Amino acid sequence: MPTDTFYRLPESKREHVLNALRKEITRSTFEAFSINNVVRECGISRGSFYQYFRSKEDIFLFFLADYQKSILSFASEKLRSNGGDLFDALSDSFRFAVRMLCYKDSRDFRHNLFCNMWMYEILWQKGMYGEAVSGEIMDFLNAIDRSRLNLADDTELYTLVEICMTLCMKDAAGVFMADDHESEVNERFNRKLSLLRKAYQK
Image 1: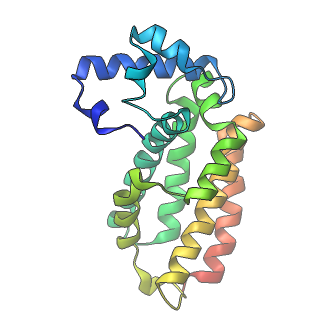
Image 2: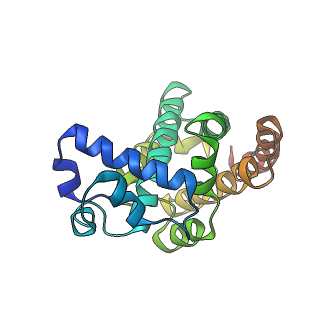
């Protein structure tokens, strides 16, 4: 994730760096991503750049967190408006996520950001959510009405949510990996979600 130094930059300089990063992700996979191209685009030294981001992993995690925050914020709002119904919120949030994955940013940017094995490996190593979205995930978990669910304790709730999020990631990947239409992706996810609803909703 970005360093404190990055966040202290003037807004115009911060946006200039972010635009250069978006441009490089748009034209490069994770493996081919070049920090040299970014520093040339920004007109800064490589040493200066490393005061903003420690590695290309941090760069990709920063942009992934932007998507995660939007989705979690939407999901938490759904929970607050539907009385804490986890499964309804997940269904609506998945549709929101797929729509965003289909249309937010350019297709090449989205493809290169999400379609790499490194992303999945790092998410498993660091957990589904990093520090950058810890507040958002806690808001989401706290908005769930646990009395609606057939669960023994918080550990089982966290496990259920992790299962659901894993399904979300796997099925949403169809937008990129197989160029599935968003209606197909939504239908596939909701079939699985309905089985979980039968098993865990009172």
